[in-house]
Length: 324
Ligand code: TXA
Ligand code: MG
Image (cartoon, rainbow, N blue to C red; front, side):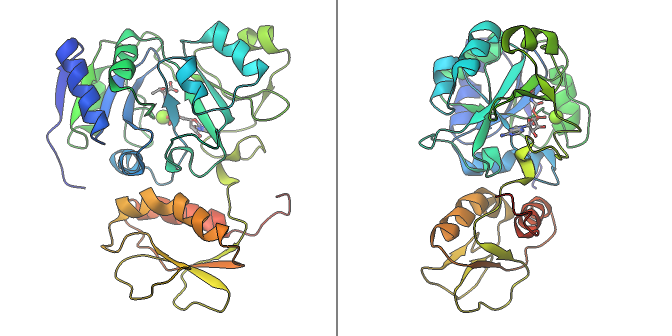
């Protein structure tokens, strides 16, 4: 990606207004929460969300946490049951994220939840984050504001050191008080599941919900059924590195390709990997909805965001375990 100038603004009214405007324009803004600094993007904008993965240099599309100003805003994108309401009333705003079913009518990028039917939502308490969310008036998708694999930042200076030149704006709001990522609680299943320990303790969660199971392993390398990161695959089979299209197949292509038609979608005619990433999940779903048996996918260059795109495609193409 082209290096750009990264500006730091303080969190007075003009800084907040600049940051809100930048987000609404589809550009990235790092901002403080009480846990760590987040790398924020308009969660309703596929291109903006794709830019997050590009700036972080993430090798694959992990679903991102969507930050909301309050529970009412979170309820516009996720479905809350009684447990979720109880947790929200007790622990929001705060260092807790809930994974909940995505509302079918949510105006959210599909890339933000990596094509899953669930979404991770959080209402942060940090006053700067609160002011930004209210000024922007949109849900903000944000992973920790560091290069992939690096330590999470707890000051604006850390963000600059890790991501300088890769985003236009950092909203500075001092040192993060918790300094550790939020606790992630998965409430999509019958049993509450702790996906990541963090700012809110298991004891606190259990006092509200009763027993909370711990997911084995790292949410970035999912293996438990509750960690649905690798679970999304279309109903159709996916055939990779296709050069031809067979009868009854749909085609997902990339770059200059003269093939057109109702069963052909082009991730990016100009060969732009960020555009392709932004379209990936929406296009897989669109082709799947045609009811074809197989989606043939041309090979995508394994560079930049292409590595993350290929990771998702390989998962979608992997042999099914019969459980879906
Ligand atoms: O404290 C925090 O949580 C910070 C601040 C910025 O909010 N954010 C953060 O984001 O740590 P990130 O992207 O580094 O971690 C998000 C985690 C990932 O491990 C991801 O797998 C999990 O949340 N996650 C997000 N959506 C999910 C979903 N729908 N299902 C399961 N896991 C999900
Ligand atoms: Mg992180």
